[in-house]
Length: 299
Image (cartoon, rainbow, N blue to C red; front, side, top):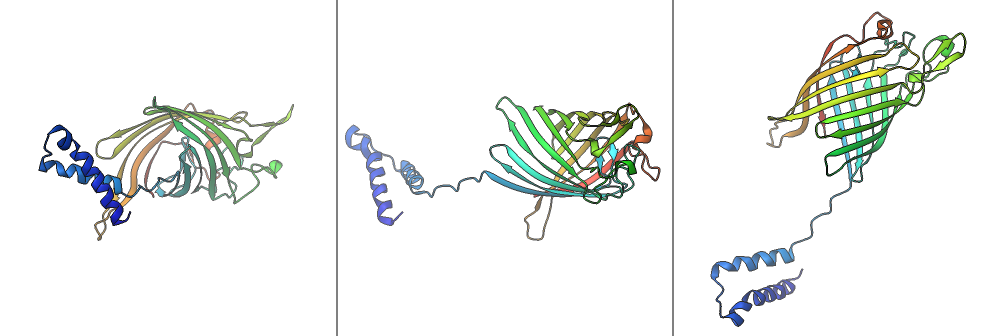
């Protein structure tokens, strides 16, 4: 706005503010002048920058183990990270990776088969209503690029990759999520002398999870879940409890590096249908009680 424009607005505001003096015999006090200045400042202020409906975040973390539904998929430290896009409408998409144990057999028949990495590609829609009730619909593709074939020699040609759909319902600090595999469970199809091969589609997992914020940037988590492997022998339950803390790192410039989180999670399993299902080819039990420590950053 030009200086002449500002002067015109100032004169108009002053005239309006002085109206009671001219017509009502009331004198404007000197300490009321700042009100005119404030009104003028509001009138000539530049419009605020619009907020973008798009957001893009990244995350990277180091974990003492990769735990997935009570099962240690890495034999030791795991480097994990990803990227997430979100739109203000509620739609989102992302990708995530982790190293895994190449000796993990899972299903007792050579699941991992030399795979050293898992890559997840996912997308969905999430919304929280004014009542506090939330819903989250997601599809997740589990990709194992190191090896396209899975299981025994008889199953060569079957991909280990799986696609899983889920629906999550939340209220306040509680979330229930139902997962269902729409493909064969990590490519598995089992032998049956009467009916040929049985598929393992619609293996599912139920999870009830609680998260709660504490003073001092602390958070606690507790969850219980149950895995149904559908025509396989890997049915089992699992539970976990954990604690974490958000923090920042100081720098010489005085501006801290934000977005860090560190914590520890205790995981265990119960009602295991077949322990051999969860043994690696080198004899490691992957569903033993485990404490996982981690540090990660999101930016």
